[in-house]
Image 1 (cartoon, one colour):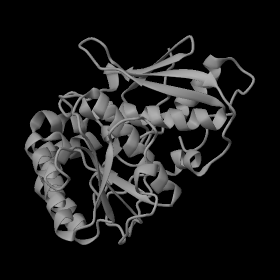
Image 2 (spheres, rainbow, N blue to C red):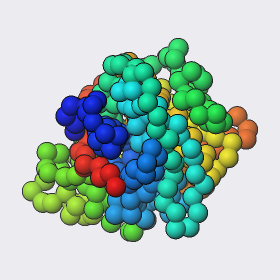
Image 3 (cartoon, rainbow, N blue to C red):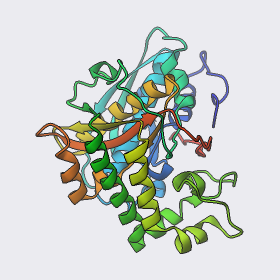
Length: 332
């Protein structure tokens, strides 16, 4: 999906409007582009939660990455709904066993905000994992970049070069770990396809591992047999050491599903602001998800903050222009 999903049904019932908006929100990023969102409309409440058929297991044992992904979907919905005249008030929900809901959005009519750079950025946003040109901290990258959630999510731009190199080492180690664990490697392989092949979710191998060339074998098979953890880790470390763009960590005081929701919404708002300025981004989950690496990443921040999202923004030096595939979002 690279454009609006048809025409907004301004004169239609709420269900038709929400059906349109969840397709727009489906442009949000998710871990490995698994797109784990499930949506149910009850009256004027939209429940957003985990879709088991698209959730990660080996790669997301804590469900942190799923919660972050769902929160980005929620924030995309909030931005899109406001553009078309629906105010979406978000209530975070503490997940308990058997309850997959992350947030409930209470929908009321409001004056349409109209087209805006943030709304257009939902489509302009894209991932580039290669090197970026140098980038100084933008003036908008402060508390005003965050959604007004009343949460304690905080942005930490990392400008010290040595700190960026240390973080790059963590990112490389995290990727090597993911590619080395048999269960996680198999799960990732199931989400990999060659660029241009029909797919509903997952990643192009060429985008996941820049420099990869298409081979005359299924991408899943190639990934299982040939994806090199050491080589992939070194590529990430080199990018962080030589051409990282601007590294930003989104952190929270707490470390629970509510905090993950806050961090995901904050991170997505940063990605939209960056995309509106023509910047690409890259997210590395390893330093946040692997406990030993998360502890080390936290030492680069102020005391008391738990890193939740590690990302880079910048102008790609060698853009690939590989857009992520998307599935249609079902509204129950």
